[in-house]
Length: 343
Image (cartoon, rainbow, N blue to C red; front, side):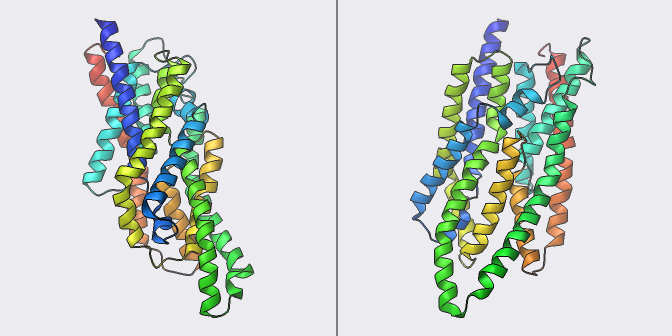
């Protein structure tokens, strides 16, 4: 009976991981600048973006962010149980859904890592052989949390510097409306390259779905062949998420960006892609949306435009609160499961 229940839970976790991959694509807004600039036909842009996102997820599934979430963040000798992973997923989903209904911008990455933290602490307290001080890899966790603060700051700085360099060496030398328009038409193709590059790294840094699968692999619930098979399926569903669901968000945002310059979109997307690439190669899951927001702020500062400090402050509050709230929620869920003998 226990083995049967365990198998059912593993199947549920795999289905939820695939659903998460779809939601990653469905909530991705990276293509908005490209669609708004009218570089490609809408469906072609969706298809290319989806393929890039799915490819990043698939080709970087052998380690990096997936390994950090699924194994490296755990303390030595500690492995996920299927109930721990279930508590992590339930907590993350509840907090993100609550945030969506409340209109609050939340980070799925912060929510996931917070949930892992809460579950591991409760797990250690209920396991006499596990010391809470060694239940987590504190060094790895510290690097992840530090990257959450550094990545937006570096996104701001890189965007600021890129715009200043481009303005001084190129944009300021354009004379007349014709030269400016011709330059912006050329930047449309650079924007295309930067957006596809960014989509690849968005997929590569998305540890929510693949982290769950890697946790099942590391705990022995999946073998390597099964892991890569389900990773491939996740990549396909991420692509489908962009093509069938993200089109509404992308079209809405793109309609608000028709007057934005392709050169500005190129700078923002290039900056965010650089940050995502570096974070991924170091195995650090970060918030793409937070990086993008700070890249936009960096561009506004470089252009000497006013920054919406009130909205930024609101985002910062929920940014800080997500980790502890997700941790407490996941801890209570896992505590409840443990009380019924599911641990």
